[in-house]
Each structure stands twice: as structure tokens, then as C-alpha cells.
Image: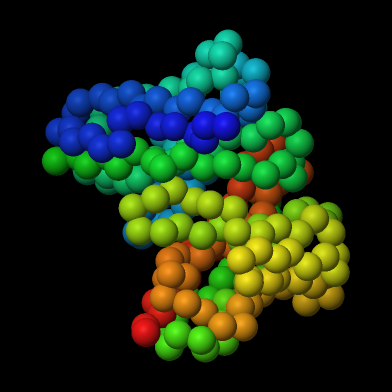
Amino acid sequence: KAGVTQTPRYLIKTRGQQVTLSCSPISGHRSVSWYQQTPGQGLQFLFEYFSETQRNKGNFPGRFSGRQFSNSRSEMNVSTLELGDSALYLCASSLGAGVNNEQFFGPGTRLTVL
Amino acid sequence: GNSVTQMEGPVTLSEEAFLTINCTYTATGYPSLFWYVQYPGEGLQLLLKATKADDKGSNKGFEATYRKETTSFHLEKGSVQVSDSAVYFCALPRGTAGNMLTFGGGTRLMVKP
């Protein structure tokens, strides 16, 4: 069974640009969550989707947005990039909607903002 | 919401040494607890989990026991190997609904031959 895949693996952008990251969950998984990982702030929750609906959102500005498609694939978008958005963006999928479900993580997308 | 605190690293050990990484949590109710591991250049992998008080999660020689009375979930391994060098994260659900985790700050483990 294929794991969680994220594309692209690496991105370099300049300030002010926008970026879209993609995540394909494990087949059959309907929940997708996104996290930002930085050396200073650690792992921070961005948002969570289940069956195309955003169920929860972390404390990030409106420049960060996302969506989930009917096949459970998810995208996140960051507009007007800032230097501080440089991070590893991790996507995780879960089978069900419950709070104690195991999450399976992808390899991440490394975003560098110059 | 729930929160977790884990010991800061880096932790440097010699091969075959005993490992303990401390993790304590604050939570509403009794959520599942998790340890994740991140190898260089990779995403997170679930190492082990425990779903209720006094449960012991174990995998690859690592163990952690869900201690309700001390709100702790310390990670242990009796004999570490160089291949265990990685960053370890303690985690629990962020709240009482939804697939969201809150993580500790991570502990980098370096094992020397």
C-alpha cells in the first residue's frame, strides 16, 4: 500500500510569490492534516480536512489556505510569501474522523523563501 | 487545549547505552499518546502509541508506559544503536475532536559507535 505522497519535495520561491503544495493520502484515508515544521517553532498544526470539509484550523494568518478534493487529495496554498514561511510542510492522513486515530505522515515539502 | 513537554536535547549516547527521553502532558480526559521519530531528511514515523492508562506501547525495542498519575509517557530503550540516531517527538491529540496532534519540541538523539 502506497504511503502519503507530497509534491513537490523541494521549492524555492521569492518573497511576495504564492505557492501550492499537494498531498495524496493513503488510499481509503479521508482525513488530511497539515503541519508546519521550523527550527524555532517546532511542529505546528495548520489545518485539517475530512471529506472535503475543513474541520479545524490552527493559528496561522489568512495567507495560508487549503482544500480537499473528492478523492481526498489535498492542497495547501500560501500567498504573499514571507521569509518566515520557509519551513518543512508535512501532510498526514488518517483513516477515520476520531480524535485518537493514528496519523501517517508524508516526507514533507521543503519550502525556501528568498 | 492539550499540551506536551519533552526534555530538550541533544542527547548523546554511546552504542548499547540505556535511553530515556522524558515526556509529560496536560490533557482533557485520557487521550491516546504517541511517540514519533524523524530521521534526517524524512517525515515523521509513528514509533509507538498507548491508548489508555497503564498501557505500554512498544516497537523496535522502544517502550513507553501511559502513566495517568504522573501524566507522563517517557520513552525508553535498553540498548541504543547508531541507527537510532534521529529526532523523537512526543504527541497527543490537540483537543477532544478532530485529527490534529500537538507535539513536544523534539529531542535529538545522537548515538556514537
